[in-house]
Image 1 (tube, rainbow, N blue to C red):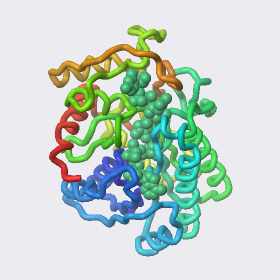
Image 2: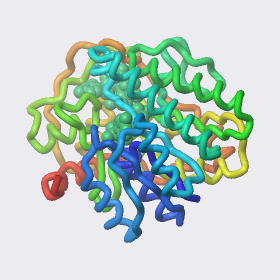
Image 3: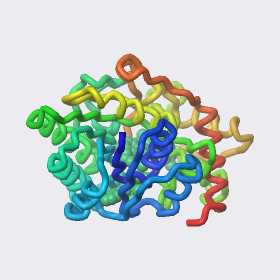
Image 4: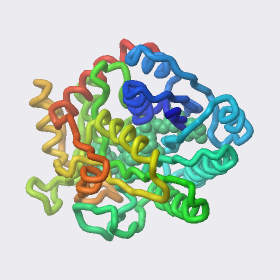
Length: 337
Ligand code: NAD
Ligand code: UD1
């Protein structure tokens, strides 16, 4: 199939591009590079030894998007293009609602115009909110988000469900990502946070390399075995592979399907720090600080549905996640940006 990757130059999009190309799908990448670098396109080509078309464009620019759909025979869309910094979204809520919801609406409108009916959406574990109990199952009701970013995901899931109800030819696959970390084994692509990272793993790697002096662990008094929060970390290449399986599943499907994409195994913040130290033979300077507002104590997935329906199984463990995150961090300086 020929899949348009909206936001395909970003962290998860670039890894998915590699996995799709390696599975003999064709891709077209559309990105405005607001949170990525155009050089990633060449690095995807270098890893896969395959060529594809890419466009620098804002997904919200409908005329331009129509032109792209006219120039390419698109079979399906994966929508990664969004703003994703939780803290920033509380300061710039309108920018988050405008970008995240407009990109989704514009894609759906243009897809309808060109009779493209396969849509895969990057959602987040954040939609479970505070109300549900771990492990989160797809049939639980969406909760209340703790940030405008989270609300955009909840709203977009609702929009997609309504769109699929009205257009019965539409196939929507909502992938609720848990915590992706790691990088491609080539260490040519990975996560490139702008400014000081908000997320745990890029913070750890930047402390390890000396860009940041110390990691603050947000809270040591949670009701968990070591007092720190637990999350479901998944290797980004496994997450990317789930998209390939979703594309193949969408071929013969209509309506909406929701899948958690995680490992189902929770690790605490301290587990991650210790695993990173052990995997890479390093010491991380850290202290236990106050809790971070909006953090949940626990978040992990029930992965039975994705295992059963898509046949998805993760291939990489926590050691891979820690090693690949570190190798990528060390390689960033060698990559011309
Ligand atoms: P990312 O920022 O690395 O990638 C997003 C890409 O979209 C970037 O390349 C950016 O330039 C592009 N983009 C943003 N707005 C655009 C627009 N209007 N037009 C064209 N391009 C645009 O983020 P990521 O980590 O790869 O996340 C991808 C998706 O997955 C996002 O929707 C994010 O909310 C969701 N998600 C991410 C995580 C995570 O931990 N990384 C977790 C859950 C969900
Ligand atoms: C966060 C977002 C979530 C989003 C996801 C991916 C919040 C409340 N949640 O998830 O909506 O989908 O990122 O972008 O922001 N930690 C530290 N020190 C740090 C950084 C993190 O102790 O410097 C801890 C956190 O408290 C948390 C764990 O590490 O317990 C993971 O944090 P993070 O990587 O930010 O992911 P989430 O909070 O799970």
